[in-house]
Image (cartoon, rainbow over all chains, first blue to last red; front, top):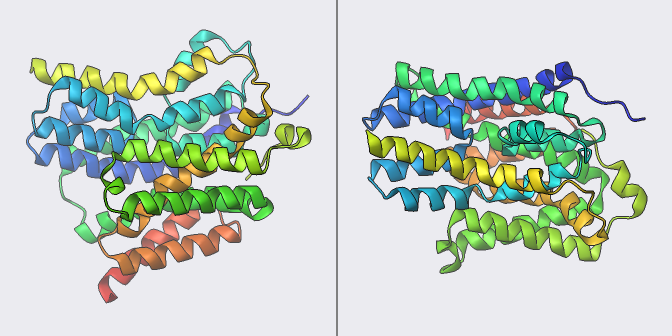
Length: 241
Length: 100
């Protein structure tokens, strides 16, 4: 019987995400209120969406008084990568995990929470996942509220420097497993190459960001799955941070 | 007012549906070796796509961003804790912002 991580383990792993989220959502709160919308709206959006790119793009459309249908499909497209994360997570849990728990935990799937949960897949359970999610959720929501209330208290130089925090966390999550596994390194390199192509090459760079993420991730993973299909023991073993 | 409420609902649904549908409906362990491998590689592929090359433009100064990225890669290679990596990189980018 494998040892499962506890709620407390989850909280410990979630704290760094919480701080980074606080910084980013603070900026979100400032953005929304400085464009004349209410602090309440900003906070409720953060509390019900819990996603950065989708929210930023969503409020931009609201500022532009876009139609609700366009808003829905744009945010859906940006968030489509969560389909892949949710599908990956579904394989780490027992068939018997209740519907209620599935409905609750899926709300908290974000890039960062997913990344950490994935690195703990050997002992992943509902309790750990909720511990992992709880502080980032409050960090995100309260950060938005305080950002809206305080406005530009932070100098812009601090704010822009903080933008790099979440990306650095992603790097810290993907590099250690890549060191141990050549196929993971190759997945990362293919994804890096494709992502740059979609960013710089004329015409295809005009594609929607959410769509780019999906295409890049699916192609990179599919290529590596064909080149390096997992052996039975690797499927069970997995990586850990 | 009504417009904002519709917007709220639309955004909340668009954020929740992609997260809940797979987890709710894929209960059985997937048997296909290809799909298992695919899901094993997906996290690394998605996170890389989200991070690069966006990280180079996130600080408004490509020089500080590239140095920050290099430091993040170096620290991660030596398995420094991810919170510390983020903190050091923010501090470095902030400090360099005054110089470069």
